[in-house]
Amino acid sequence: MDLHFSIDIAAAPARVWDCMFDPLAYRDWTRAFAEGSYFEGRWAAGERLRFLDPQGFGMEAVVDDCRLHERLSLRLVGELKDGRPVADSPLRTHPAHETYAFSRQPDGGTRLAVQLQAWNDGFLAFLQDTWPQALQRLKTLAESTH
Image 1 (cartoon, rainbow, N blue to C red):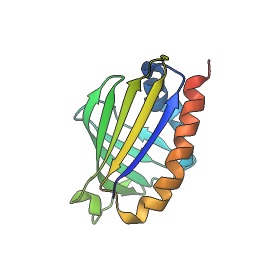
Image 2 (cartoon, rainbow, N blue to C red):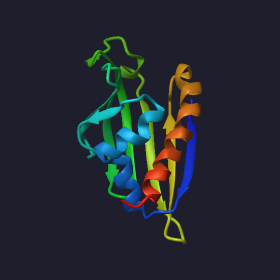
Image 3 (tube, rainbow, N blue to C red):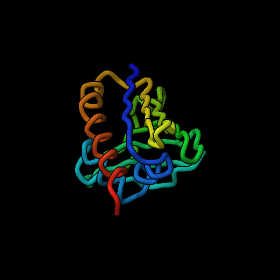
């Protein structure tokens, strides 16, 4: 199943990108998914990332494409439990995909579009509920001055 979300943010694409992928800001906006969420790895093509909660539950992904301040796509290739790969994760044979596109708007702001592809139906209600919350928090972060 595929899902699409988008939000307009009154900040330049570089600022939105930085807020989305900075380790500290990431912990903030991803609280919608799980309190204490964090990632390990680098947001660069070919790199492997791990997305975890404090109990070690999460996902493993590979960055398929990374165009700075424009687009990033991930292939989710496994689940984690207690920080270890789940051997029988359906993602091993049927990866899910996430794509983030950052489009500069005429007013100088950014439209961030998120596309989730091939997600297991068991996650849909959770994703439909949490992604809008997470994007609203990201918007607040990106539009704030520090």
